Image 1 (tube, rainbow over the protein chains, first blue to last red):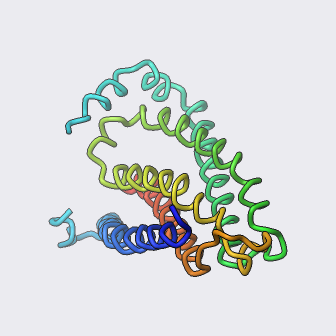
Image 2: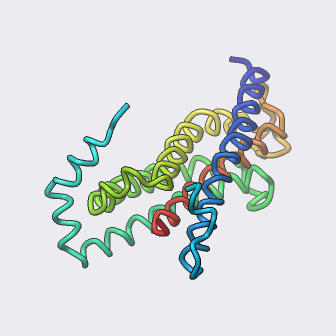
Length: 51
Length: 168
C-alpha cells in the first residue's frame, strides 16, 4: 500500500471514528447526565423514561 | 448473538466467589486496574501529543513511539486481567449495563486502531512532525494529527465509560 493510499484510509477511519463514535458516545453522556440528575433529584426525571 | 452465558459462567466461577469474599484483594486489584489504565493512557497521550507537536518536540517521534510500545502492552495486559477479576464480582449486572458495553466497544476499537492505523501512520510521520529525517514514504502531516486526535478521543471515552459504570 502506498503512503498516499494509506494516508487516505487512515484519514477516513479517523473521521468515521470521531463522528460515528462521537454520536454514539454523546448518547452515553446524555444517559450519564440523566442518571446523575436522578440521583440528586427528589422527583423522577423525564429522561429516565427513555433510558 | 447471545453471550449472556459467558457472564453466567463467570458469575458462577471460583473467581467470582473470591472477588465477592475478599474485599482487601478486590481493592488491590481495583488499584492495579486504575494504575494500568493511567499507564496506558499516559503512554498513548505522550505519543499522540508528540505527534500533535505539543510535547517533547525536540525528541524524534520514532524514539518516543518505540519506547512507549512495551509499556502500552504491559498496561493492556494489566487492564484486561484485573478487569476480568473485577467484572466477575458483578458479572450479571454488567451483562445489561450500557456503559460496560460502550467501554468494551471503545476498548476493542482502541486496540485495533492503535495496532493498525496509528502504528502504520506514526511510522510514516513526515519530517516536519517526526524529526526522524527525510522519509520517502511519509504521509501528510494533517493525517498524522487527525489520527492522534481520533486515538485520544477513543481512549478518553474508554476511561470515562469505565468510571460511569459505577453510576448505574
